[in-house]
Length: 453
Image (cartoon, rainbow, N blue to C red):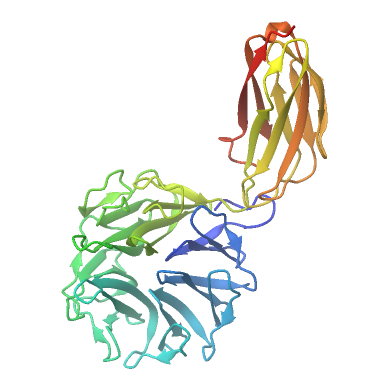
């Protein structure tokens, strides 16, 4: 998301996904939710949010937010956030499938699912972060939830269920963790990355260093499992380097590595087209055809990008695409006319200006119509618009703001001369200082002109 340009969002700090859709946490502590092909909508009733997490089930997203006062709030879909009772002094949260987790300031871990009351995870203390990921077992068609905890002493612990936690051997000096599918990823204090697989018993294998990764600031992991007896589950990892580049490895069937291919990569490859990145995330998104992967990044300018499974409507799969641009309007212009024009008569165009962005415009909106030979200006009217013409250019200005999803229409009437026969193409453009996207700011309208009597 871009820096604030006139109200609304003030730039994204972190993003989370789980399905369907995602959450964006902005610099002012507000939370915005978006889903497939929709625009971000601010989650009402939440302020001073410090972290978000997103789990899911096949029908809805399960959203969790941590506020600055240590309270935890959650909601599903468009319902209002409600405070999770019996939780206070929380410093970190996480989610996996339908399970949610909270780490309190005293280092204890609490877990709950559905509408249940959070219960303390036994045998864990001194914890500073948790991560969880779902692995699907086709023999019983049920998901297996892996849980990983990072302690303040740099050790990593895994617990598959209520039987208790076990330390992951071979890991020390760890500063960050991620978990997805059957894979755990850890970042050491020396900025190297380590990876391990969870055995079928739920106990981890020996961690191995991910080759070629140094100077890493943060890590993330995602997973996929399509609903097919012949489709194997897969996991992928993301690593953010100090230079702002992103590197990825592992499963790539849905382009989640962002290297322009769908080829599995045992060694990390650079995610193409991304620079100046400040944060990375990954998720397994529930869909009708399975749990599919998406990778996300937030750049230092506050814009959010995604690649992988096409959950967010505009992804080019294997190449990062900007998915949210809060704080920015996005004006689009469309032109139309009714019926063919006739030489010697009058014709009328409708110029419709729509704000397809997420915030209202600021400053004057200007529409410029360059009339083709054979058409001359007669009049132009529209609510709030002031129009004039200097042949062949018609200029209309509107100092009022255009709200998100709102439209404003100008009716342009022209005289049609015989030289317009057999047809012309009218061209128009809209500009506004708060609109950074010029790709949809022009429109043309081919017009058939009959010779008349």
